[in-house]
Image (tube, rainbow, N blue to C red; front, side, top):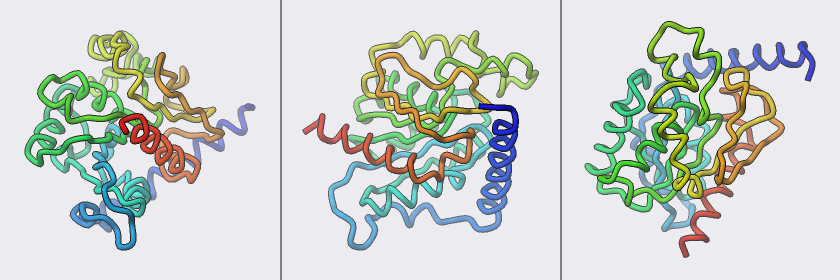
Amino acid sequence: MNLLERGWAWLLDYAYVGFWQVQGFLFRADPGQYLAPAPGAPDGKAPVLLIPGIYETWQFMRPIADSLHRAGHPVHVVQKLGYNRGTVEAMAQLAAGYLEEHDLTDVVIVAHSKGGLIGKFLMTMSSVAPRINRLVAINTPFSGSVYANFFLLPSIRAFSPHDRTLQTLLANLELNARITSIYGRFDPHIPGGSFVEGARNVQLDTMGHFRPIADARVLREIGRAIGAGERDAA
């Protein structure tokens, strides 16, 4: 991939971010609309918990919420996460509280970027781990990002490959069989990629860190990952 292609991917990625940040702020969807199955959708589908990335509210993941809701999944969000600026552990505690409060079981976590780290952290928590079936992560820095080393903000430096929480999660290989990691051929924020040892890794011909959230290929793979998990559990 040449520099022109990479530059164009960067531009489109941030144009997408700008659109959805404004869209999510001005035209906020009611998360309650996703709790009941869509009309005509099949019943009995596993509940999904959406976890966005850093500086993203759940509204940023509405393309995924819409797709899964149409497929019959009740979709849950943790509004207390806000813009997801806290530590991975603190955000996981908030998500755990939601799972317990609503007594959710057989949950599929669908997460973007930092949300995938939060999802895996949840799978290590004895209080809520039995409630979680699997994790489907999109463009998550499971091995960190070297770019994080150049930032002073603790919220960004937490993605450094040397971060203690990230290293602990990375060393936990036992959980990886229940993880699907979806990522593209070029992610400007995660140059090392999102491959996870022992997980189901799906690399698509997509580019960007944010824009793939609404890509039809990504949405299809999310559905396939959930379906594969349901078949394994049967």
